[in-house]
Image 1: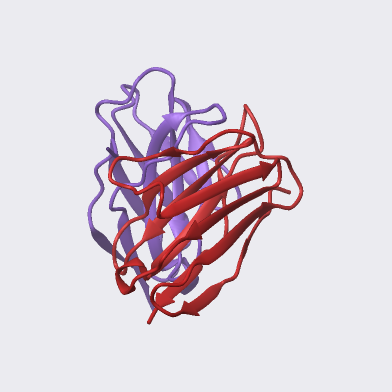
Image 2: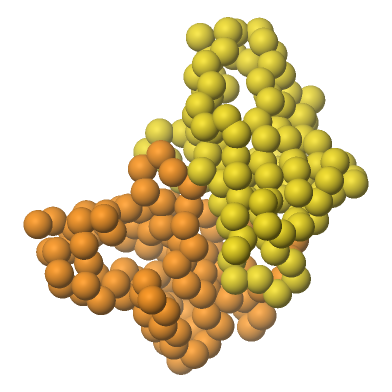
Length: 111
Length: 116
């Protein structure tokens, strides 16, 4: 079973920051938080991942709470092309461990 | 790096026939690949774990005799949907990992299967 809970949908104005929350209250010490997104009829795209420190890359920032029970993915300046389903996943960071997807959050970026 | 190619991107087949979907890691070797199925407006459902040189591990409720998985090399896994029926129509997606310490699995672009 997926170990994460996300809101089913969110709206965001183009150019504004999109903040997507994720609850993972049962995360264990060796599990990382991963974020993927899926644009319609395409395979999921990796965005970012982290263990306990906040992370940033060219796509997004990941803020993980100190107790690691929740996290927020931040798209700093959302564009229309960011409209997609965003999946928050917890899993161990070694090869061979399967990735289980929850329902995700459908983000609508509006002009 | 870390490109996964999936072929075909779409296929239409007649009921009762078999369809093979290929998943290739183009620039890395993948000892483990995963196969997912996705129905419209639903999330990805893990079907099986494909292990190079050994039998695949299927998730509960997935018929191993219907969904045949072969991982004959470190860069290729195939999923064959045997005796396909209209209810097998779905979006099938594979993923692969570069290795032990990874930055997330890379996913193929998916295969849209329509059984008529």
